[in-house]
Length: 91
Figure 1 (cartoon, one colour):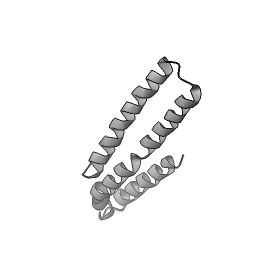
Figure 2 (cartoon, one colour):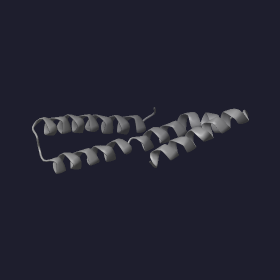
Figure 3 (cartoon, helix red, strand yellow):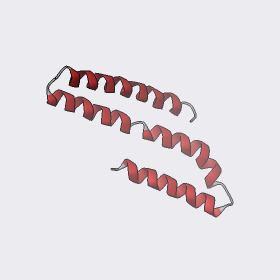
C-alpha cells in the first residue's frame, strides 16, 4: 500500500483493535447487552471504513499498470477484481 492510504488504514485497524479489546472487557465485566451491541456496531463501521483506503491505494498502484496493459485478459481480470470488491463491500 502507498501513503497516505497505508497510514489511514493502519490507524483505523489499530483503533479497531482497541475497540475489540474494549468489547471483550465489556463482555467479561457483564456490561449491558445494549452497550455491547452499540460498541460492536461502531466496530463494524470502523472496519468497513478501511476497505476504501485499500481499494484507492490498489487503484493508484496496480490499477494504473493493469488498466494500461495491452493484455486484455490482464485488464479484464483487474476490472473483475474491483467489481468483486465493490460487491463484497455492499453486503
